Length: 493
Image (cartoon, one colour):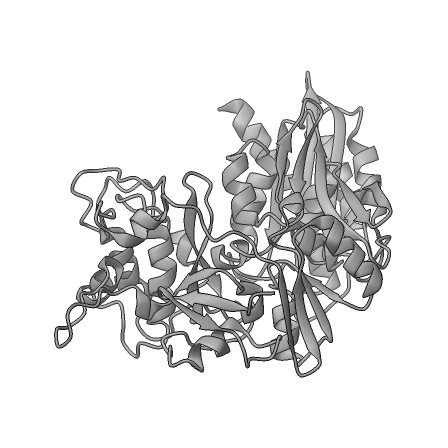
């Protein structure tokens, strides 16, 4: 077994003697790369973001920004990362480094004051700078306030501000940061990081990293992984580590054995068949979003509201379902889509409808040693869909209530209704009573108002620091009224 190591800014760095739970953030800072900062240790502020070379969607390699505070350094074994220090071009000894274009724009447009958050912003901005299909709307593209900008969140240079949705700044104000983002040009042919996209990323490697009695393990195949889990049913399974990383940082959780599954090829497939779409459990949400490219409209509504781009660059559907959280954002959507999960262990596979998957608070039918291999979405899809997330912040926040709708309406009659709910019970649930109140009825004000009264009573919403039970119930009913108003406006227009 080759010693675990990471290529950092073009140079190999051994992971040893770091403990298996040591985050990539601490690993980098211990090596003097202090541009990577800890702000929240939960993946909410982006001060820790770095770039990772990952399999690309439009090119062999994508530069992807991730939260270094959440990912164990051992999970990056064999991979290639760039920190804010690695973006600048270092010249001959005695000559100053040349700033990267995103660093230059942040400097000249006043995008930095105390500087604490700046390296993280720069890394997230660089990931968007190198996004292969980013294209300018105009030739000039220099003014952040150009009328040719697609909208307030997309610059004339094609820069998507959602790339910075996971980065927080407490002193500069976001206007100069937006100005810098909307002013960057496109990479030149001589740009080494742009050239790097044309080559394949580092291939997955098997990892057996043990230190001080604990281990991080990654196998080459799903079969080997399932056999390992049979032998080590106590192991913690991680993909993007966006949930486990918080447990390690905030609650000081430790595990004797952590098994990484994010690089297993069997969990990274996306297939479109005649009667279903199958999504690998370890594909990141960003990869799913870009590969589907809007082909599943309800998922397309979910993705921009799921945490931040930094989190979506690591998080997976398998991980979101595996935690069993009643406030995860993907379960209501997948329930409305009538999805099922394919569970695999060393003896074989079984398919379970998602409506039967959850059994209690953070509990499911998944047995020890089983993994979620994939999620299956049946076809055809319902044409009338919506995802309503009620939260205190527009982005990067936990839902107070989440509601997903998928309706078939033909000749003014609701032929089929599927509604998934989150945040209103111990598990994500289907809104069966409301579905029954809609199906076979005209899509009318009277029907919707009656169904909205049913929806207000679904689940057992509680009061907590996010919302009261009365507010949650009110938002359930209001969400259906909102959907009706939106569909009526669409028809009348």
